[in-house]
Length: 300
Image (tube, rainbow, N blue to C red):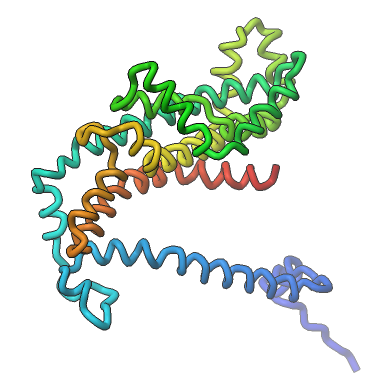
């Protein structure tokens, strides 16, 4: 009796060829990953709720915000809160936006330049005392900012920089964390590329500008975003240095505005949204490099 063997179809053969054998413990690993994703999703939702609540609240009326039980979605969305803030003669937002942008952008540019340059020196140059000097730089990160405020304030008094935006900018030109971050990224740049550029006759400045900096884009984007957020939201030091109303930055003005409108939380929420918009724009523009930079930081 002749037996016939049915040959699998082409699609079945391809599936069998690509099917991987199930490894011991693979199912448990997948479940652990799913549990981790679920836990992170829960934390992400919890972290996002206040932000979403603020945005939705900026489109509600004051009566709706104070009603019980509270509503999540605006029942009657309105732009009156934004119109009230933008037309308030006691709140020249354009002036305070200009002050905050000047401080944040200037500090970001200065920090990226000094951090990348000093990180390059600490990572790629051999000189006596390099390691103790680097540990000294790291040790400055352990000093609380409140400890250095009084000496920094006295120095600004001597320099005549009180009530001056440069009094906020100059002390932040060099950042120990930025130097540390750049130094760690510099190790990913092969020494052979730097030596090849030197053999070709490139100057040290040309090597820094044309060889090193293009490979630091993820690190520069990450450091730039963190620095921008820190100085955009800074409150205590600008409150000490700037005493004149027209010199102040947005966080100080937002606090003042909140004390003047405690009975109108809808206006405070709209003002808060206006303050956050530049941070969201900067994050959106640099998101791709930030994700890559944080990923590389985690693998080092």
